[in-house]
Image 1: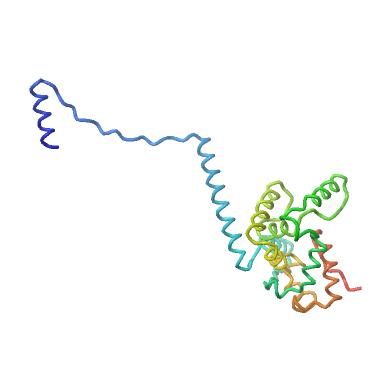
Image 2 (image 1 turned 30 degrees about the vertical axis):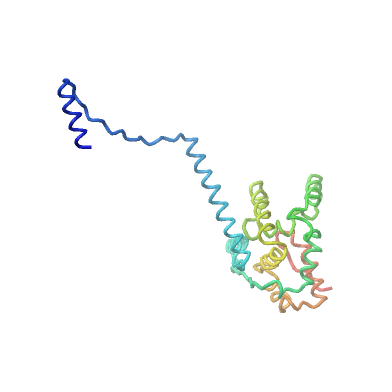
Length: 239
């Protein structure tokens, strides 16, 4: 290489030519427009949201759900109302929850739970038509939808929350399956002021374990589920 360069210089001198050294070109960074920056930010947010959400859905397939957004919201409400902040939540596997309670939940909340894929469109249509007419009827959300909302989202009625609820419902139906959905639902549902899950509710209301409900009290708890649509659900008294 050095020889060739030397020969080239000699030839250039011979013919009276001047050799100018080649300038190194540096690449200038491409400037993104505002629209491109916004799109890039939204795309990254979308990817990270999917990665994080799928991670937690996979995690909660095997690990008990320790805490939910609803528990935090209720604790803040208790604090703002000057009440003592309480949160009673005892996780138990589904094998330790009375089968009668599982049947009661399906009967009162979602009769087609074992048949649908997360959504009961007929019930949703009826609920929508009833709301349009001003009637007060049972909501159209399935147990899967309620579980998705309770574990991953906040309370309220907005298109954003309903959209996210549908997204998480699809995920838990695909990844968890019906048995796990029922297990998480019965361990996270609000069943009194600061009381969450079947085990905590059983101890709070009946001073019994969730797997040994007497039949009469089981019927009372079944009636209780019919009041869960209200913002302040209360246990129905024994008759």
